[in-house]
Image 1 (cartoon, rainbow, N blue to C red):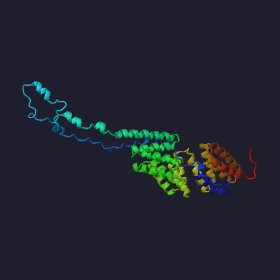
Image 2: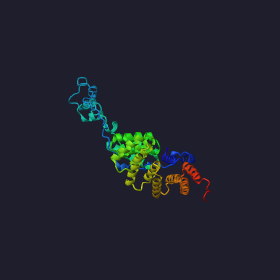
Image 3: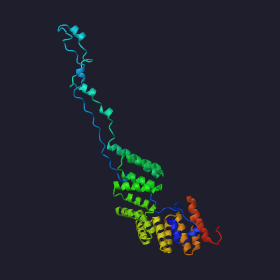
Image 4: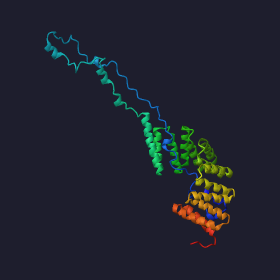
Length: 357
């Protein structure tokens, strides 16, 4: 049950409004995109690549003994005949072997390390390449291309498996694609690599909330808050989990803290309004929905919930105004399911009253 549908059920209005799809409302825990820039945490380069060992040169070439010419006994050469010596003496360059200790022969048999054994990229080069691909993924995520971003983060991780930021950003991309299981897996890996990464705990808590693992969401949000007490979003997420576990007072306490940290956070006011509805504090709920609308004038969900609350209190005229505004906003936003629900609420609020022109 999503948070808009929850309000309707609380107020006994479900039959008139019908069911509300989860896509009909803006999730109050939806994080901002690009919340973890590449410069926030620099990954450490890997330094474990082994360099190849060049082969050892042979000390004594065998060619010297195989090609050694026949001793002087077979080919007598008069000592005083230079012409005969010229005809029968082997050409030194072609037939005479180079002695074993000659540097030239060793160079011929020694393979060239640079040609036959290519040197792998240095750790610094690998880190630079991984960061370039990672930053490319960040740009794709900013443009809403989450699948492309995931591909880049995956490539960066292959180059540098200890890049915690790449795991975190890939988790966030999975989150926006509503693949919460993969988001949890990647945030868990980020936490293994960097146990003090508050954002990883926060997003894992958000993903667990959407999987209805409310105790898990509370545990992760609590750790995120411990690591970063100024994270208003973590307070909101923990408040949502408390609220769905019917611990409304703890939820309100967390929303209060979020509002203290971010006085213009419309989601904190909106969610606190839902908690007040659940405690039958409808006047307080109306006040919070009104404040959320003051911060975000096109907040269709806040108009809708305030209309439901007015209807519950018997103020049909104000309810009708809010439902009409909600219908118009949902139409502008292309939220067809929410349009249908708001129209149903409007019809129920009007009853036998004529449609206003």
